[in-house]
Picture 1 (cartoon, helix red, strand yellow):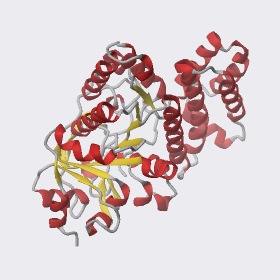
Picture 2 (cartoon, one colour):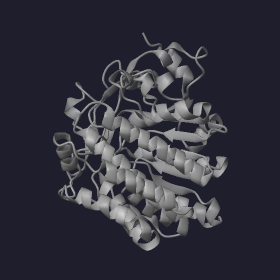
Picture 3 (cartoon, helix red, strand yellow):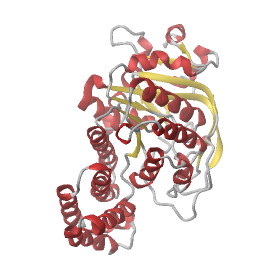
Length: 421
C-alpha cells in the first residue's frame, strides 16, 4: 500500500513563482524541457506552465517554445511575438476545433510577455513560438504553393501535382484515408516528390524553415490519415514521431534549447504506462531515447475542479465539472496525503526514492472530449509516475481556461487528441 507519509515528505511547496526554483535548478543544462498537462482545458496547468517557461527563457536561455498545435497557426503567433505585433489577433484567428486549446486568455498573457521579452533583443536572439503537430494538411499544402509561386518557380509543377492529387478527394482528409484504404492508390508519390523538391531547393532563414516544415507536415499528414482509418497504433506513432522530428529540426535551426507544451499523454514517457503494451510510443519517450539526460519531463495532475472541453468532437466547448478523483488513483492518494495543498515533486534517482514513485497507479488524463459521468470507466492511464516524469506539479483544485471565442460551426473531423483514455 502506498505510504502517504512518504508522499508528504517528498512534497515541496507550490504557492508562487518562487517555488519553481528547485525545478529550474533541476533542469540544469538540459536541452529540452517537455511540460505536460492533465487536460487541454485547465487554467492552472497553463498558468504554471507559462510561469516555468518564463523562468527557463529568462534564467536559462531557452530559445524557442514548441506546442501541440498546427504549424501554420503557430507561425502567425511566432511572427507576432518576434516582430512586436500584438499576438492576440494571431491567437484569436485559430479556427480548427478545439480552438480553446490555444485561443485562450492564458496563452495570450504568455505570448504578450514573450513579445516584451523579445523586443529588447536582436532578431537572432529572439525566442520563437512554433507548432509541432501534423494535422494542417490543407493549410500547409497551400502555404507551400504560395511560397513556391513566389520563390521556387522551378518547383511549381511538382507542388501542383501534389495539390491536384489531394483536391481529387474533395479537400477531405478523412475521405482521403478511407478511399486509399479501399483502392491501392494514393498521393504518396506526389508528396515524396514535393518534399524532396522543397528540401533540396528552399533557402535558409525563416522563410526556408517555414516552407520546409510545411512540406514535412504535408508528408506526415498524408501518412497519418492513411494510417488513421486502419486503426491500431500507427496513426498515433506517426503523429508523435513527426512532433519529435520537428522538435529536433527547431533545435538545429535555432541553435538553442527548447520548451515543449503538450498533453501528459505526449510528454510523459510512454514506457511507464500501458501505452507501451499497445505498441504506442510518444514524444517524451522519443526525446529520452534520442537525447538521454538532456531531457526533463514535467507532468501535472489535479483532484477536482472544472475544465473546458466538449461533449463530443466538434461540439461547442463548455466548462464542465471535474469530479473528485477515482479511489486509489494517484490523484486520490495525493489529495489524501497533502490535505488539499498544492505541491511540486522532483523525482529522485532510482534506488534513492520512496517506493510510491515506482508503484503502478491510475493517473487521470482528460482530453478535449470529456464526459465527467463516465470517469468510472475511463480517463485514467496506468502509470509508474517516477519513470514517466522527472518532475510533477500537483494542483489539488483547478478551474477551466478562458477561451477567446466560441467554436466555429461544422468542424467535426475526428483526430487523436486525448479523449477518454
